[in-house]
Length: 157
Image (cartoon, rainbow, N blue to C red):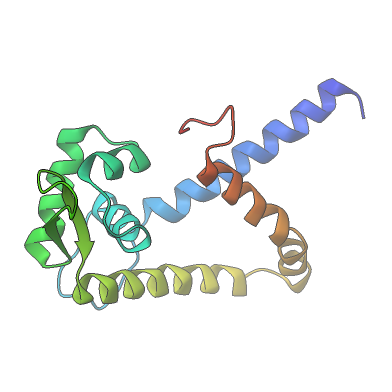
C-alpha cells in the first residue's frame, strides 16, 4: 500500500472512531436516576470520581472547558449533592472538588447505563463483527491511553 492510500485508510479509521465516540456521548444514557444531567455534568462527575481532589481549573483543563463553563457545570453537581468543595490541606485558598458517596453511586449508574446501551448495540452485530472488534480491543485501549496521556500532537497536553 502506498503512502497516499495508507493515509486514506488511516483517515477513514480516525473519522470512524470519532463518529463512534460522538454517537456514544451524544446520547446520554437512560437510567433510573431521579434527575437528568447534561452530558457535560456527566463527564465532569466521571472526572471528579476518577481524580478526586481536582481543582476547578484542573477539571476545566481535562474536559476542555472554559473556566466559567466548568464553574457552571460544577454548580449542577453541587446542587445534586454529587460533589463537595473542600479546602486544600496545604493551602486553604485552593478548593479541591471531592465526590460524595451519592456522586460515586451516580457515576457508577451512568457507566452501567452507557455500557448497557453499548451491549445492546454489540448484540445486534453479527458474531463475525463482534470478533473483529474483540481482535481490535488492545489497539482501541492503547489509543484511549495515548489520548488521555496527552501524546504529542493530541489536543490536550
